Length: 249
Image (tube, rainbow, N blue to C red; front, side):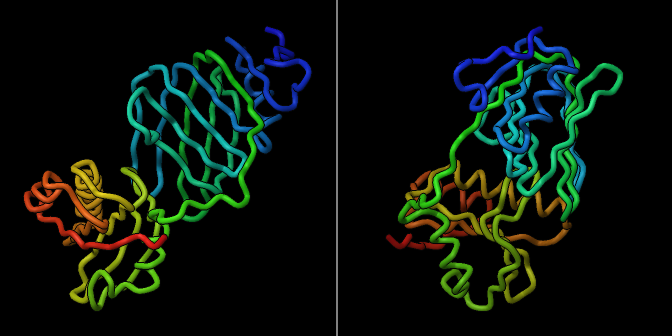
C-alpha cells in the first residue's frame, strides 16, 4: 500500500486517502492529520462508551468513524442521523495499535467520558480539510428559542430553574434540563416549526432515559410554535406537556 495515494496530487494537503491500509499506514495518517483535518475511517469495528453510563456495540460489522479537529468523535451505522456513540468537543483522540488492531480512543476530560473503537479490518481512511463559516446564523432557529427560555424560564412556567442546556446523554443532547418548583426534573425539547410525532418520541426518549438513570420523577415539555394533531395525541398518551413558544426572527 502506497501512503502517497492522494485524491488530487496537486493539493495533497487538502485531502488524501488510503484504501485497505495496514494498521500502521492508517495510524500514520490519523496521527498526522487528526488536528487539522476531518477524518473518515471505515471498516469492520466494535466500540464501547464509558462515562456517565455505559454502552457497547459488540457485534463486529461495518461502521464509520468521523473525527474533527475540535475533538468531535462519532461512530455511525447505516441508519438515522445521530451517531450510535460519540464524544462532543473538546475531546482528545488517541490512536494506537494493539496486537495488530487499530484502536481509537476519544477522551473527554470533564465530565470524563471515553469512547473506544477497535478496528481489526480497515477498509479506508480519508483525511479532508474542511472550512468553517465564521458568521453563520439562522434566524428563528431553535437556539434562539433555547436562549429565550434560559434567559426567562417563566415563559415555560413560574418557578422553573435551569440546570443545563445541551445536556449530553446516550440518547441525544437535551435542549434544556431544568427543575420545577416541586423539585421535579424537567426536560424541554425545542422545535422552531410545527412539531410532529417524531419530536414527541424524541422527548419521550430523553424522559425515559432520565427516569431510569436518576430514579426520579421527570416531566417532559415540548416547546414549539404549534404541534400536529398526531403529536398532541402522543403527548397525551405519554403524559407529556406542550408549551406554545414562537421563535424570534
